[in-house]
Every structure is written in C-alpha cells, then in structure tokens.
Amino acid sequence: MLARMEISVESLRRAAALGGFAWTDAELEAIRPAVQRLLESLEQLEHLPLGDVEPTTQYRVL
Image 1 (tube, rainbow, N blue to C red):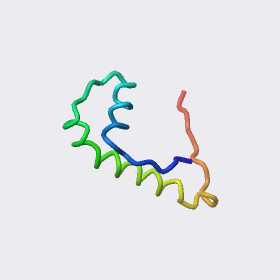
Image 2 (cartoon, helix red, strand yellow; image 1 turned 90 degrees about the horizontal axis):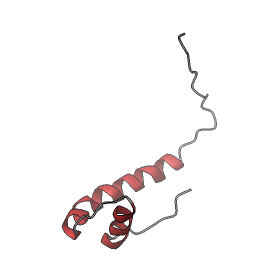
Image 3 (cartoon, helix red, strand yellow; image 1 turned 180 degrees about the horizontal axis):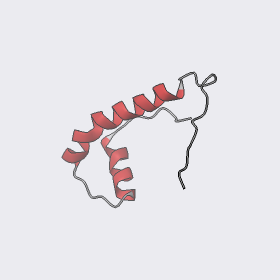
Image 4 (cartoon, helix red, strand yellow; image 1 turned 90 degrees about the vertical axis):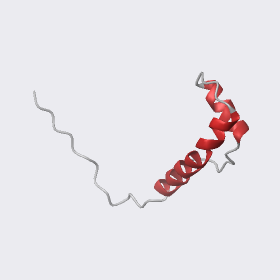
C-alpha cells in the first residue's frame, strides 16, 4: 500500500509544514531515524498473513 520513499530532511520539512510545525533542520534530522523505522514497521505489517485471522468481536454493555 505504501510506496517506498526516501526519508530526507526536506520531505520531513514539507510534512511538518503541512502539520503547522516550523521545525529546524537539526530537529528534523534527530527524528529522521525514528520515522524511517516506523515506515519499515508499517511495511512489515502489510506483509502479515491475515487471511486466517478472525475479526474481533465487540461487546457492548448497555
């Protein structure tokens, strides 16, 4: 689902600006490894075999 992308300071700056943040390059560089790891985790989740998993059951108490 997610396209493979390079996480650069420039792409983080644009994403932060869309969210209303004015972060410095140093701040963006500090979070760049964490963002990369999160995207790798999402990629791993996309490849999990969920065909045999039953959906969760929700119980409501009135």
